[in-house]
Image 1: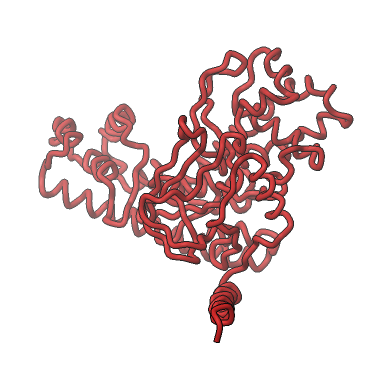
Image 2 (image 1 turned 180 degrees about the vertical axis):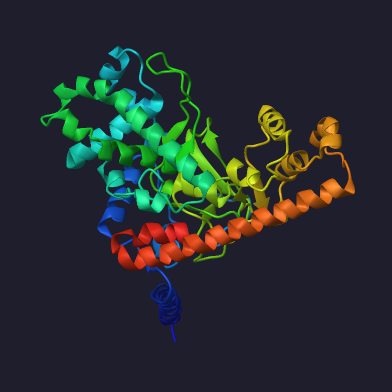
Length: 418
């Protein structure tokens, strides 16, 4: 038996095991034309990788798998600056002269949105086509959700969702004049090129897919932070709260680098960590929720906090004013271990009896006023928790009915349900 034959059998065995893995669980996307084009495009700009593979995972959707075991401290990816899409990219393009001349200056975010919309419109003529072809057509951030879906969100998240939608609409309205100035660049009416739907898509692309990369302040932009960078291929890495990574732009190598601080087995999905975010933040900023998220919290809005207080409490308004002054009506939550310090402190102050009210400063310092105050505060926290649980059950029942009657909203409703 010769070595060539033995090597062939080993190779076939590995290939069989590899194929079995994908056939049972996930789908390798490496052979697809759009991914081949992206890898070729990246190679032309100095990035070549033999470890990561694009895969459609059965549970999480699209991500990157490693073909070799990764050890803590090992580099996951180092993407050259030429591959990154930043405001420098925009200024060096055909849009640069228009941005420099425009007054008042537009924001870095608006510049990036404009560039994405223009390049998507150019499509096959765009040098960024291989990347644009792999960007999602729609998103699941609140900006994209139907109003019926938003109405099912918990009150604190629903309020922030409306704020986000209002912010994007306001940014679009304030950018219209600049869009009109770009008419000489387009054969089509700019009003149809830069419509709200296109802007919505561009804003979500930047909000959900950019990495943090600080840039020097430029006079042609407004004073808003310029810290965005779209990173093709790197942005296929999904979030997991269970892993730790180190990510930054390396000034020496001129690459955006990510190193894993956790081990990852061969043929497993490689994750990065977006930060210690609860599901409310993840849904609002990125359009998804994480399973088994240790940072998960349930937020309590002011109305829910106050509706259980005794109506006859003459000091109610003063107590609320004190909490507002000390910003203790924001970010009130229940975590895995019960009510947060902020929530419990707010409840203790609100539950102070008339003869105890002069001790309100001690409450803010964390002192115990009386056993009775402690007991009443915890009982109120329990009532609020039970009320939120009931509201959640009612919302889940509504979602179940809506999923049956509104098939086109199933994906959005399933996200809210999670």
